[in-house]
Image (cartoon, rainbow, N blue to C red):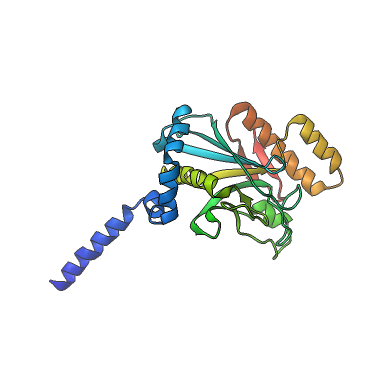
Length: 249
């Protein structure tokens, strides 16, 4: 009888744990609860203005180092095109234009990433981890000394991250929670040196003509930048063994 009762209790707790959503697990933390109290109303207003249902939300982030901006794009899961929801200000940067290639270089990465961690107890209030180093970084960076722990976070300090203040991270963090809670397995993040308009791209190519590493990456980023600006769709891509990107047009 005792063993049977134990089995029932185990099954109950297993079924209970399986029913806990990602959002529920995040709401266990006081900072996340406060973020919803402070920012859920603005989130809903922004989504309504773009005719996006919170329960169907899918998002994409574009960051621009020179402009110190992070763009939040969103759509319903069943839509084909993204709409710009909001732009967040990056309050401090470090390093120079170009990719991150080793630990301690102070560089903000550039390239094609996704959110791989949610930290509700961050030293910088709330933080969203970026999957640096990606496959390209591992090929082209300094082997064994690539570094890591790159985040979009609160506060206003950085040695390679993208800080947007505590107030802004509250809103962006819960946008990301909602998207992941809806089943978005990966939230893509593309980090550009700047907005790669024709004139700006040509300026960078001329200025850094001897830096083949930068030119290669920026050429790939330019293709993705143009396709997305024209179609409002993220093109299919894959990393090559060279570290470059194959963009499927």
